[in-house]
Length: 129
Image 1 (cartoon, rainbow, N blue to C red):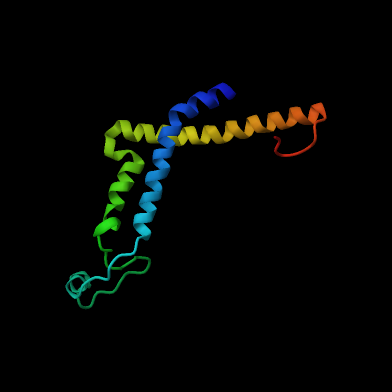
Image 2: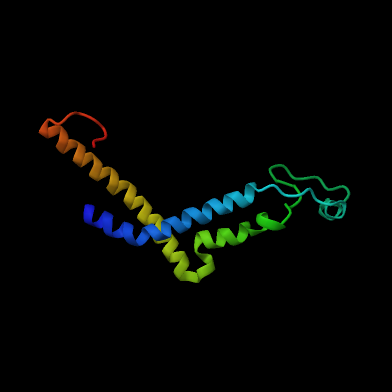
């Protein structure tokens, strides 16, 4: 298991860093402060007279798509791999599966090493030097 964990991490580590970075940029673009809409933009986004927002709907004017906040969609396409076509999406899906494998195999290896230390009578600590 350790050999698979190491070899797959060499390949998928690059993609997982890419996914983490673009995910952070996507969230940063969403949280980035935007300028208040101008009077003309607010008037254009206003609902027609007599319109009532249905229950459960989110009837708010769209956010300004200027500056860094306007890149959110592009960051999302990079994050999901859509920007690179079907191959990018496939690599993104495989990277997600690899992350699940790394989590399970890492925990499995740790529990095995901890059990072997306990059998040998080594100090019962969670982490060792």
